[in-house]
Structures are given as structure tokens and as C-alpha cells.
Image (cartoon, rainbow, N blue to C red):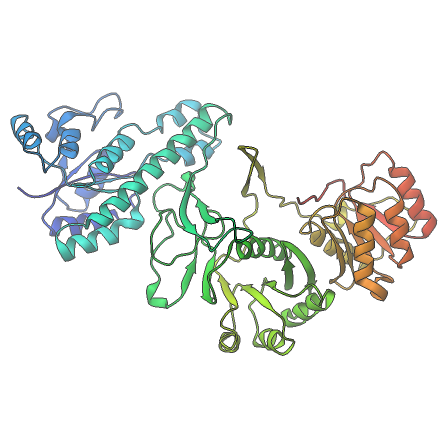
Length: 540
């Protein structure tokens, strides 16, 4: 008897090549509805499910594969004589390969033109049942829920005549992750957000957590909304580079997921990323992508020590480093433009102890120079744009806090002057820069800036006036004529008074305090231009 494959896919990506290669391998193809029509129109011989079950599709296709001759063919145990005898008696033939992807529920749900009835119709019943049945019997059945896995399966079938036990088990595990995430998405929709499910994948042991006595792991989020083809875990062994990507599937391939569920970058060289490296690199990456102009960010302990923008990315790096050289020790460097050879030369010549360098690309000369510092972790981004609007998760007290990322971009037109003295055009430019920078610092946060570079950052303080004092101390004489940003309103005028002592000329802050009028009055008395944003920039 020829081997049999059941194909039922809503996503037709790669289906033609799959059908041709399976036919060449001698598989009998069994299919349903649109998949059957697609293959037959391409000249591929397909047996309809109704020919197997001797029962027609019914209820507008709601029932097609839910039949003992289908599920029995998937589930009977090939190594048990009793199951084999029963299958023969019931005229149930084995199904050896199940390739199914699910109805596009997420896409339908996200389409505002779709009605409730149309969304409900995209809740797949037969598909998850087929996948789960095949995954349960993975000792004998190969199951595929993602078009990204077609080539891997076909390569083993063509090379060995069957898939390996290891691949069968891996794909079975992926199925249960996929169907669980799919069901969680439906539950979220039906409950109007009361229920939500977070699926974690790609679990990796870290050297340790924040401290050596704590264990640590890294997981990426599985995105159920992507459906078939969302897996970005393809091997890159031929490139000789360790991939820092998110994968929907735990695989021992040396892949390192980093940024939620999307492709992030390649680890070109360096030691494995640690727990704190990941936290700091993520913070640096988010900070640098607040800026459209060429910008460099230096991060220490998940908060920036220096940020600068300049037409020349090398000069931006120099200014970011100069902002606080003392703190730039064991630092993470993030760039939103390709890393130049000149930047790497500065890292080496200035003896900057660097943990990680992150950039969208690296000049060939930069790559060669970095080889002199093999312990520096060098990450080439493959997704240069910030993932704006992504969902952020944080565990707390046995539960989970969930929020949207702060992707609000403030414009000059939104700055509301509240003092007699108005900021100049150059000050407005620096105020907008400082506002972006202060959003990346830990609250309470104060940033002093001049000429599109931070000159002093005070962050993580329980008192806003203390944060102002720290920023002033770091800025020194450079504070004269500079601007200041505060991530939240001033509860008292004391921070404004402290800023004035050091020569701050203009301030941006959210406003909204019950003492706003006192604060505005004090700024007027001190000759400081002040504008309010109407939005807060807390980062805890």
C-alpha cells in the first residue's frame, strides 16, 4: 500500500511544490475543499476525503474530516497487533502524514468589516482535531502545521524514506503549542479580553539570572496571530553566524531568540548573551529607535548613560560617550545606523569596556577590528524599526501586568508654553530630543541636554529634585544654557530652582500637578522657558 498524506490548508504557500514532491515520492494525497481544488487544477492527482469516508461534506463544510476512517487512520497504533487487526476489520487505512494549517481566525477577527458570524465561522474545529490526533500518534505519523517546515520534512522523506523520530516529536510539540495559542486567541475574543493566553517557546538556559545564585532562562513569545508561515527559525548554519532571532519552536540549533516573537538580529561574535545582557540590549535597542536621525545610545544597568544625535553616526557615538564617561564601563552600545570602523577604533583606543554593540549593519573594517575584542558581543539587527505598539508583559505577585509600549511621538506643535519666556527654535529641537531621551531613563528621571546630546541624566530616584541634582552634577559647566526634561510633573518648584542654579534655560515636562501654577510662576521668576506636553513618560 502506498503511504497516504492528508492535506488541508488555508494558507497555500508552498503547496504546489509540496504536492508535486509528495506525488513523486509515491504518496496518495487526500484532501478537502479548496486544497483539493488547488492541487487538481495544477494537475496533481488528489483523492477527496468523501471518497475515503463514503460520506459527503455537510453543513457548508463545517463537517468534512470528522470521521472514524480519517481519525482511525491517523490514530491506530502501528506497533500493536490488536490495533492493526481492528483497522483491517473496519477497513481503515493508515494516514502517515498530516499537513494542516488552521482557518485564519486572527486575520478575520482583526478585519473591522467582518461580522460576528463571519468571525465565528473561522473557528476551526476539524483542523485542530486532525493536528492533535496526528501529534498524539507522532511515533508513526508526521504532522506539519506550518509551511515553514515543508522543506525539512520533504528533505528527510526524500533522503531516508521517512522522517526521523526526533523530527516527528519536535513537530508534534509544535502542534500542541500552536493549537493551544489558537484556542487562547479564540477565548480572548469570546471573553472580550477577560481571558488571555501567553505562550512561551524557545526556552534557553542562561548562565544565571541577575545574580549567580539565581537560575535564569530566556523564552520568546509565540504569536498565535501569525498562523502558518510565522516560524522564523530557519537554519543559518551556512553563514557561520549565530542567530539572535525569535523562534516559534525550541530547537538545539544555536539560535538565540531575543525580542518577543519577531526576527531581531545575528550575533556576529562574542560570548553568549547573559540575562542582564538581554535586558540591557533590549533597553538600548528601544531607546535608540525613539530617534529618526542618526543616534547612539550607551546603556548601563538598563538605563542610558548617554544619548546623542548627529548627522555623522561616529560623532553621535563620541558625544554619547562624552556625556558620562565614568558610567560607560561594562556598557551596551546601540546605534540606529551602521557601525563604522571609526566607532570601533574609538572603542579600542579609548579602552571602553563594552559588553554589547548593536547596530543595523557593520562596515567590513568594523567587523575586522572587533575581532581584536572577541569577548564583545556584536549584534547585527535585521529588523531596524522599533516594534511600535507591541504588547509588554511583566510578571508580578503570581500574575501578569500587560500594557502597550509607549510609542507616542511628541511634535513641536504639541508643546504648550506656560511661561512668558518662550523657547527658541534651537531649544525646541533640544527639548524634543530631551523628551525622547527621558522616556528611556528610569523614573523619577531628569535629562539635561544640549545640541542634541544628553549632558546629564538623573534616574531611578525616589525624589525628583534628587534626580535633578544628579543630572546637574554630571553636566557640570555644560548645563549653562542647556534644556531639561522631566518624565513626570513637578510636585513642587524645588526641581526648577535646582535647575536654575546650574543655568538651565528651558524645561519640558508633562504638567498636571495641583501645584502647576506655583511651578510655572517659579520658572517665570527665574527666567526659564517652560513647555508642557500633557503626556507622561514614566519608565519603571
